[in-house]
Length: 120
Image (tube, rainbow, N blue to C red):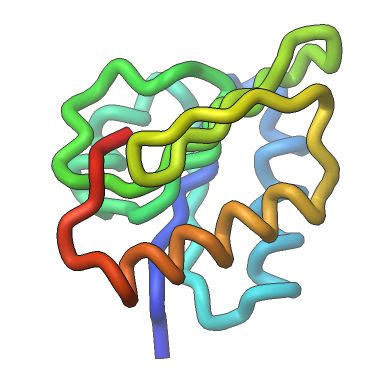
């Protein structure tokens, strides 16, 4: 049973990175529906899938549509990543897989316990 949906979107040059993140989430959180997209298709895929969590190399510039979580994960380890959960933002340097999985878990907690979240 799918409890949440995640979309992983990166530039084509980082497709291996994108696929690795998607595979890791599928392996560690098999109940999460995970889709991947290139940045050129981001807007269409967000509209089509309506994901709860987006993990992307860019900040959110789209209509949030009540989306509780957006994880800006730049492929450049020198840039800070920014996680937005329920409208609250936090930054971190070069997050590991554990932080990505924590974002998945926290997103699921939000959609279970808070029917209307602050947008990200």
